[in-house]
Length: 399
Image (cartoon, rainbow, N blue to C red; front, side, top):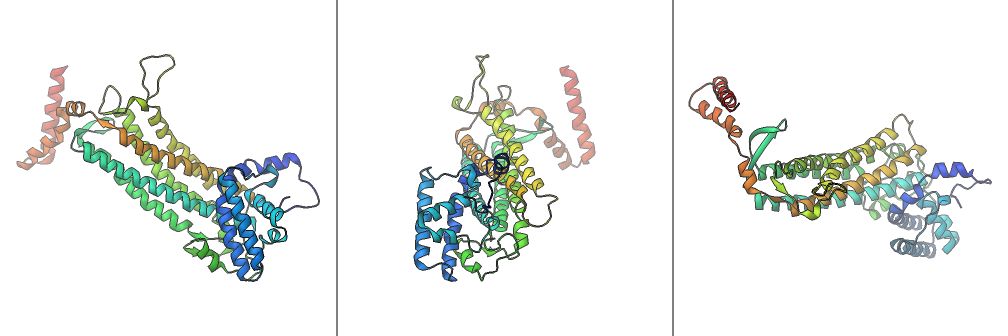
């Protein structure tokens, strides 16, 4: 039975359209909705809505749901619409009237907000840990190969001397900044919306301090209208952080696609990381790097979907916001797996010292020669012209 059940049945085509795949996506939220329901039940007990025995029965029922979910046996049917309905129906079927009391003082609007906040906090924590692991792996890579000199490029042309330490350190520093952004997103999201109801509060003396402590939120989100308005806004900010991480991974993937080409061969990945061609028997393709490069575009598309879905809506809840859920979940998953594969790449990446040394050709040191003249008293612009002409003359002789 639907939580909003009327005297009529919803048109089957309308139901299929409005539910979409939300009942499938909500499997991700079951543990978090159960966590929030547990805290809510304890709070209802404290304010006298639930008896001690009813509370104990509800907590036991929630444990059963979590056990079934862990085994892949907790089902959410399309007619349930979402995990909130499935959980309440399960509790009502198992323990009776107490199950019908669990929704007291809340709406599905603040219920899904709370579950999503808990989900996002967990994902941000996992991604933060994964990024820290990647940073540690890059540091080990630098310790092993950092002293190797290699060309630096601008405009995809040789520019000035660089090194493996400078190149890999750029990604390490970028990811360190990304960790600060993850912390900012976590701080923003770490607000408890439970108890704001449908967006206008609840005419009960709810103990929101208690649920905030139980759910380990840093603070209460006080304004109930803003609680609803922040859906999409908070997720959009978190996904913008995911886009920043993916931006940096896109850059290193692009570098490695170039630098592992036979024409460069500065770096090598093991054969086990490369795929073949169905027609060209000699090919070893860096598909893993190409997909890592492309997944930035995937994540930023999710960010844009979340941000744009909430635009032009008046204050309050709208069903449009249901469409932000899938994009949010997919963006977190894509970012996490991308960070993890980057760690694996650096664990297995090797540097071809000989090829890097061979690539350190004379033109890379042109700027150094300019500054040698500057140190001897020649004005910079005159020194620049002299060295520029020197290389022009050399190129003409080679032609």
